[in-house]
Length: 317
Ligand code: FAD
Image (cartoon, rainbow, N blue to C red; front, side):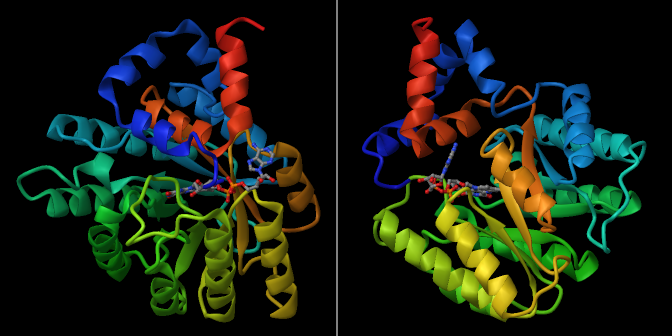
């Protein structure tokens, strides 16, 4: 929630290398992180995938990492995705009503988007390699949204990817003032758009700052996406946003293979199961890997209760 007074502090901490060393060095962090990240290795996430699929939900897997400044690191990230997609090939995970149950989510900054020499082209080439491997096993690919300085570059790369791989999805963030316009231009036939509120610290000239403004923007954007020709993905844990998605699906007569709900691994698990049992497509965004610090700090920033839980674990109560 944007009105959490500690949010700016925690989001600033998310970018601090010094704090990262301290927090990741605490033994207790690992136990708390397990709430949000099933594990560091591929085996852990493949086990989590089996469990999620067996419960009637779909999955989108993110190999943790962002802001790569090293080409070798970008290559290691691509390799991790290629290995994961190979492991997908061994899972019994048929599409449901034409909707693939398996998806990977990528961050272009982890694929080299901001490397000094030709970052744009490196990230594009790397993303293409992942898209080809995903297509071979019938999985979807989603390109995540990062901070607002990356939006133009990310949408440009997604446009290029979609020329060869039309099912590639991307994410729009309702807190950005530009997003309503982006929704209008992207709500086209075959286009898959994940709508989230937005997880980064953004300045007031580009982003709404108040929670109720973000919520209103989210609801306007969702309406544009549902009224359009694409495949909207409602990514939120907020009961009001979920209610809006359900009402739009019903009003516009969309069948459950033409939109989906998405939530994060470990958050509102009961609600995820309830929606899936009611016949909606529910996809669980599941991160894995050892680069969990930035992801974890953004989750703490969203919800003071998470922070309290972390603080209690630190003092052993
Ligand atoms: P919030 O405003 O955080 O919470 C609203 C209400 O939801 C709360 O008041 C409470 O009622 C309920 N709620 C929230 N958390 C809990 C909980 N733990 N337990 C019980 N109730 C709870 N951000 C990006 O910037 N880029 C991305 O690519 C991106 N991808 C995402 C993918 C998915 C699938 C999801 C779910 C989120 C993604 N996000 C991404 C993060 C997103 O932008 C938000 O920061 C995050 O989802 C928190 O916003 P919220 O809509 O869940 O609601």
